[in-house]
Length: 97
Image (cartoon, rainbow, N blue to C red; front, side, top):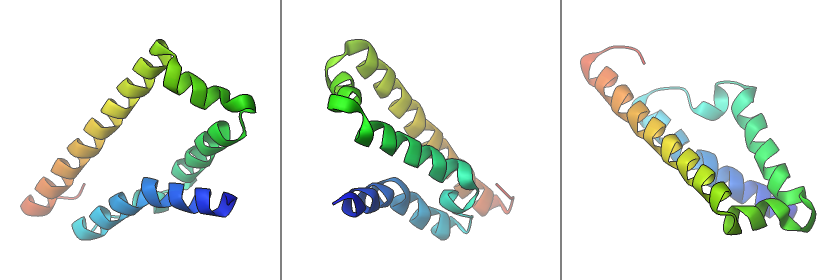
C-alpha cells in the first residue's frame, strides 16, 4: 500500500509538469536537482507519519492553516502559470528560459 501511495503521489505531483517540460523542450523539474524530490518526500512523510493524523486534521479543520495552505497553493499555481507563459514566449521568440 505504501508503494501505491508514493507512486500515486509522485505521479500526481510530477507527471503533468514533466509532459509540459518535454513539450516545451526544457528539462523537467524532477531532473533539475535533489531539492524538488527531497521536499516532496519530506511533505509526504510529514502527512503520512504524523501521529493521529494531526497534519491532515489541521489542514481540514483549522481556519488559519486552511488559509495558509490555500494561499500557498494559489501562489504555486500562479508561479507555474507564469513559467508556462514565459517558456512559451521564449520558445516563440527563440530565447532560453
